[in-house]
Image (cartoon, rainbow, N blue to C red; front, side, top):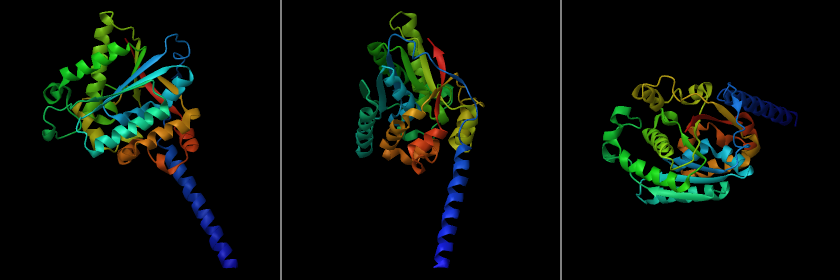
Length: 290
């Protein structure tokens, strides 16, 4: 009996030390920087947000902020592109997005079937130098879709990923973010929309290096885009701890994308939402005024 108690006690101590060590390891991925908290949403009279992304699961960069905005009475419209293959994987992803739309209570959800690449079979890398984007992607058509969406919505604020390296280097993230910025500025100049800002979801430098730094696509992207600093630096942070359940539910709804998401939302599947988002308790944005 004494041996059993000793083994049990040893096991408990071992597990406790392992959990503690892993928590310390997990914290090493969290940002060390602090930025101004954004009160723009609280003081705004009109309350419509439009998010446009190249892939449905890009939403996880803003999902905590969307919960916060909805609490303040904002409407959130969401637009995601798909390749239009409608194979089993794509249909499954569309179903996953519909589930997320219910969780996050979007006021509108649009799915656009559109193949970005002119020659998909010749795609060699996820990152594409800026001067080659026009030859690789159907940029005019993409801008046309985005223009129609923005004009129809006329949102106060647009959410996207960053237009420098697209998070970790994905060229489709870059072209959508760049198109949003270009089209919005043109429409605003012509007086066709009243949009005031673009919020681009980013990581602070410490978090970016900790999470992306070892990825070959990220290292290649910084060379292709001549962006040694990676993503643009944040202007603001938005606390999201309060919305941990909704954010985790949104992330876990993208079950088909788990192997990709776990690279950027490290160990999210190991911890309860309250603990995980007590560590990763902020979302960060660089603001572009239109």
